[in-house]
Length: 590
Image (tube, rainbow, N blue to C red):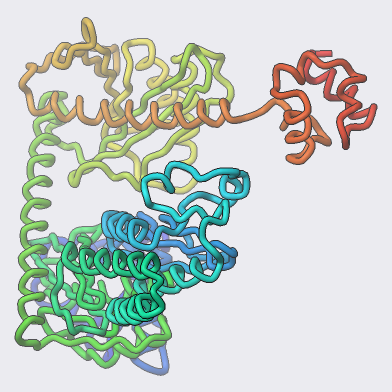
């Protein structure tokens, strides 16, 4: 379904298209569906050969077009992995977040960062694989602190032979693949063999590993000690136009963690738990990065229509056969109950929080004379250190709170150092010009972290870009920057607005202002850190990493390189006379 601007606002599938489309235009509808129908001016239809193709096409269109009225679950975070650099002679075991590409083994994705870090901590204490990167590893001439605290076997100085280290690597791989019992049996057999050979030192080492492995099992939540399959357990809750799906990840009888997902847009009142689950299943598992933690089975609290089509769709998109089960008993029933209770509690907390923010937005609108009509707020702030590394931020809040996917930072390019007014003007221009070009959603209220000067620049941008219907508010810090003493200036004419220190509307403004400040100063610190790590040698043409390293090694540091003569620079291996003159001129401003 398309609106007047030919933008897709809803995507759906059906076996009987005539019946499905006709249902939208007959009978009574909830307010959201009725509002959607007032916007529909065209309907496009694509015929597929099978139901599975229709399911996958629907998912693909929803993912790419993000229609306003579809159920869309979004998770902006990348997934955490445990990374093993198995291509190295002495592999590194470490935490990894991002795309699981490149050489080495990636174990995951895990449902939570906590699960990864806990597993890493236990594995490093048990098998003592190195955690340092290759450059640090290759430069060692004696063991580091990790060896002293018994968290590494110091392969960097060959305190362990390659064969023994490889066996520890293999045990880690088996453990991360869920074969804990196999690892413990192998360790026990080798311990007995070492004891029979009277190699008691090796036997004691293996014994300690077995004890540590058993401690790992005790520390983690054991759901079924005999389990060998990977299972995901889903709970779903639905209150009015809000929903939550809670997923528990169980691997080899161990509860690895959980995550909660909420639809981005409000639901139609007629949506039920089966529809929500169907949308979640195809979106979540098709988006899941390829890894070894795909479940063999998914437990759901309610049956979904045509489960075979969904199963076939998952198989086609993930290349894995995943069973979907609704009616279970025993332990599995208790798992479902746990997931369901978690989903209900999370949704209740979310709805209560949304209601509080909605109330604050309404009270803010009343206080500003906007008849309580505020749905979206954007706040801008500028951060720098004595005029250097200026960064502006934009944070977005709506009725659900902060919308972090829409946060933006602007590295100020044209404003003079220390000119906060010009920096604010540049950030506003770049942001709203981009919104206009992309036909984006404009806020009802723009908050400027600053006084009358910054507010006047914002008014200038608003007039130049014809931002009609957008209200402007400046927040100036009070005496000694104490909360509750801020001064509020409303455009036009910078009229002052008074709010009581205990006003909920003021508390919302403070929260948004503080979030914009946090986001700006974080960006500024990142820029400053990059500058501190940047060497002026990197800006000289012809000076690569190897020549920089040789220059610093020969002279002992950048300051000594700057004091060197052309002849001394040319004496460094790999530095010609022409290049030496170029280096000298660049470092001495000549």
